Amino acid sequence: MHSRTPWAAFALIGLIFALGACSTAMRDFFRGYAEGHASALDAYDMTSLTPAQRGAVIFAVSDFGALNTDTLETHAVPWRLAATALVMRDVELNGGELSAARIRPIMTRFGFLYPETIGNWPEGVAQPTHALETPHGLSLGVVGRDVPRVELTAANLSCSSCHAGHTFDANGAPRTDVAWLGAPNTSLDLELYVREIYTAFKAVRGDEERLIANMRTLFPDTTEAEISTIRSFVMPRLQARMDALEASGDRALPFVNGAPGLTNGVAALRMQLGLLGDDAHENARGFTSIPDLGARGFRSSLLYDGAYAPRTGASDRVIRAEDISTVHLDELATVTAFFTVPSMGVHPDRAAAYLDEAREVFTFLRDYQAPRFPGRIDTRLAAQGRGVYAASCASCHGTYDESLENPALVSFPNWIGPYDTDPGRWQVFDASAAEAVTQSAYGDRIIARATGQYAAPLLEGLWLSAPYLHNGSVPTLWHLMHPGDRPARFQVGGHRLDYSRMGIAGERDANGDYLYPRGYQPWSTPSLIDTRARGLSNQGHASEFEALSVAQRRALLEYLKLL
Image 1 (cartoon, rainbow, N blue to C red):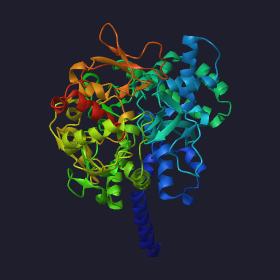
Image 2 (cartoon, helix red, strand yellow):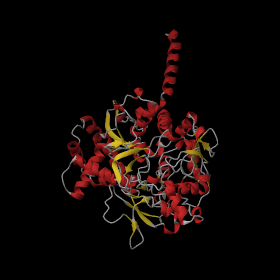
Image 3 (cartoon, one colour):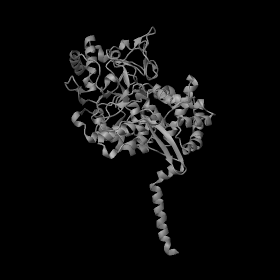
Image 4 (cartoon, rainbow, N blue to C red):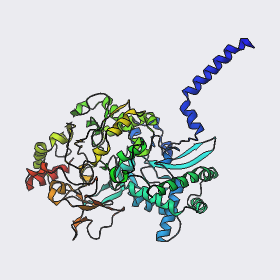
């Protein structure tokens, strides 16, 4: 017996090391953690695609690790259940029959897209599909495990929810049938989406069996395992969550999530890191307008305040076209992988697992170009505007070549400094937020800093990115160039474009509000932006235009159509 003792000890030591090595997996197992992946990825043989093709597919449909029981507590939704609750609420308000056909118009109201095609999708690769009536931009997959049995169809935001926008025709009318991967979705209203799901679930409280019965009607292929998971796992947590939300202000989120085309990722990050105070609804208003993703490789740091930067190289330095190497793009991809933490609810310690996917996305973005301006361009004026831009704008927003067909950015200064636009965004990403990111499991991969400043943005795809300024507080470029005429309130969401003023088409009413032209029916639900509200000031970036004549401003506007 004694002769076996050393071997038993070695076996025990080996077991301890094994358990230590997989401690995360063990903790996950015992706390009931389950995960899935975006089912849309299963349609693609990724090994047969080029890196750029893989990057487009990942960008469009991957979940980046955001389909699991943790994200279901904060960002993801039990799709079949949530869609059913939304349909039931729609029937209650508008009458009619319970039908899965109602899901699409409901989600469209929130600004989600159901495009027939993606205009810049890689040739020879099948276009993404919309399973279970999910819109483009929601990753769908089954979260599951065997012991205990969990099976739940979950949906969460993907990169392309914000960064795949619809196109416009030659007259400025929106074309929701054709999306462009990398363009901003300037109508996506995540605040409305989250609020309406919350309201829909509130409306069916106490009637869970009718909710499940209606879910069976809308989704007859729902398995008994999923029904069991909903009853035993989802419903108790949902009811507890609803009780907690009602007791803490009766809001779906403790902060304002934005408006059409406007997000509040920094507040979402603070929530993930446990930094939101009781006053977050009023004070955590770090709103940012969704940008086009053209020429991202020219950035040396990311976000409107330059808060994140790679650990190698100077954070604020001139980047020229020849500097955009694979190494530089990989560094930016490393930073971008952390974006899944606030936008999708991924834990910082899991974000690094998707670095390879982020790098593939940047391979796609390396050659990405925004859709070309489809309207008429006065080339004579544009030529004059090119000179105005070079003299008045290039020092902050970058130098372009001499082309009047398709100007290419050749150098970007990555200027960052104190600026006179609304301070809300940089104020919310303060020293405590930077320190929390640095101390997180991802902190050794990026530089996080509270800059107290703003970084001059790239201007790629400017023509389809209205409204303007970092917080989306100015409806057109014309209003930006004429600060005294900026409206205090204007509509955004489901809008058409005015190619003469370059931005949201509208007209002043008797109260001075800038509203859609009479008779225009927006394709999604619009919001009325009040620039007098905290975080939404339309002030700043005015002195740059003071020295320009009306003619110079008109010429500059014409040139900006080309970018």
